[in-house]
Length: 83
Image 1: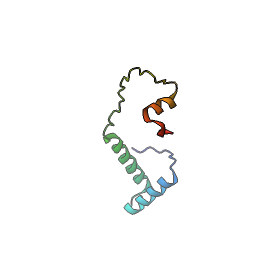
Image 2: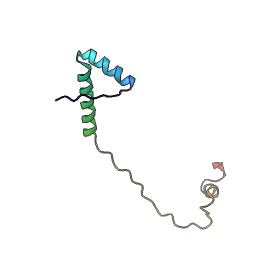
Image 3: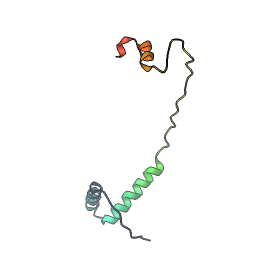
Image 4: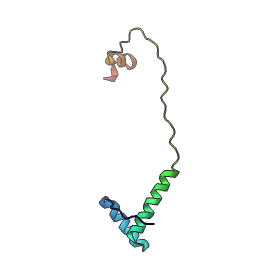
């Protein structure tokens, strides 16, 4: 069963599909269907991404460090060279 629809393609995609259909000797619509099927299979078979998780570590309260003054905190950690 075929369904007729209108698809708006970017020019570069259209040209690549047109070139591929000509080189394979198949109609443009067949090449478009093959490309869509291939892309959908690739999406389906893509390995799941590993979840990224940040694990916070308590640094405790450090006397003499004012966290409201980030410049002073960096200077304390890295010295004067950070500027």
